[in-house]
Length: 67
Image: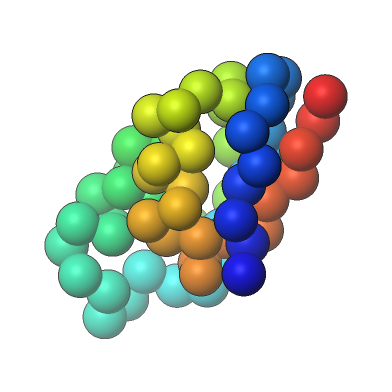
């Protein structure tokens, strides 16, 4: 669905769905990405660790690749 492609650069991610009713691991992942409210945006470096976190909660996010 929202799979992130491998690359070097910066990713802008926006939370578009609520974390209410999600598993605790997913809520903690959102906090780790700097997201905790709807429509909040976070800009992060594109690393394998960040991509793994995004893949875990990709159904809650909108992802933009800012090369």
